[in-house]
Length: 324
Image (cartoon, rainbow, N blue to C red; front, top):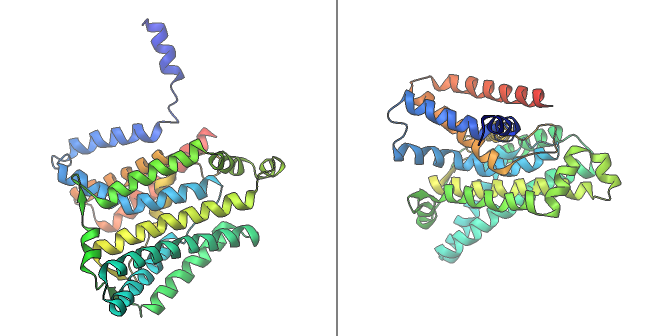
């Protein structure tokens, strides 16, 4: 390979497409240099475990943002999902005495409520012709207040030992939530890049009017996107509540909407809609996890970590604006 051909190859390389992956590598190297404990396997697994709950939700959030929408209710929906699921599981266990049946029905109920919550958001946005920001801001308040009211602003403990064991289980050295996040990423990457729905999703986000003229059912595409987000919230709710084997109605899911949106943006998905990447979203979640991990190792106050996260979000949006 000549010097000229190498220079042309470098020039043609799509830096924008792989910006989040490049940032992850750079951050990984810098973190390893700053702390000798960073590269320890236990620390790396801990980072993946911590970001997996947000990462799963962010995968669904990416679909909504690709449609040029947004879902601010995901954190509150996590609390509401988890509460109802655990309460229903306890009721079935008390009624039947069958722990396995109780866990299965509790998990199924949590997933169903998550999907219903996402469907509610999507239906209200599309049929009500309301701004996604306003709709999901409203449902964020509704889901959180319902969780606080039903749970009496307290903590609900699961009565199932099996449920708690599931939340702490490892498969081939990695926790169940981490495997779940990667499996969900594979499935949703196929949906986004290998299906007709994925093409419709990007078309709707790029230009809604053109999509309508192309005979695309825009309302259906958007509603499905919000429902997918609800399902990912349901999955994360199951994993999170089983990890602690309890639900705190005031703290569970708090701030998750900011973290999920941040992961999507840092991963390269445009807030203007029309383009996005599933694996970039996972990378974005891991980047935020590494930043939090390093700030903790360096002894930075937890109260300042939100400042760093905010600066990262602003920087990512600024970079996207320059691309446009």
